[in-house]
Image (cartoon, rainbow, N blue to C red):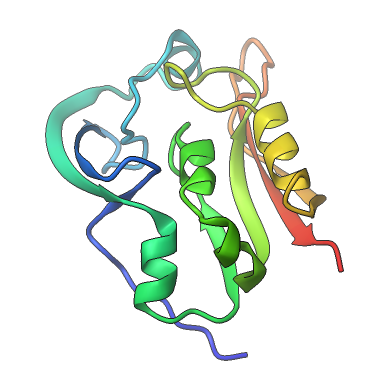
Length: 156
């Protein structure tokens, strides 16, 4: 099916409104609505938050419906806020989603971050199963894996 990619200037979550986003020193790649934890600092000690900006938060169902998306492959990498993004999808919109690729945390890389077992449980309850796991980033000297990407497929 045809692929459409749109860049929107929003954060995604359950609660709409304005929130602070912590902007990171690595060209924003570690920016998050959550604060970095000791694990993130151990894994990437050179990365710091350099500013705080206001960002508008909307729910993912609003985007799905605004663009009349019929079939979706979601790629979610939002620095610990993954479960909030998933919870922003209304039950009627889950039928439009075929696959979900999500970065999951094995430890709290960000304060109050969702953890792997929470994401797996949430997606299983919506009839998705883990299909493939890709390693992410970890602490080199310590050996602790911090994050990984998991591809979930809808059970038919």
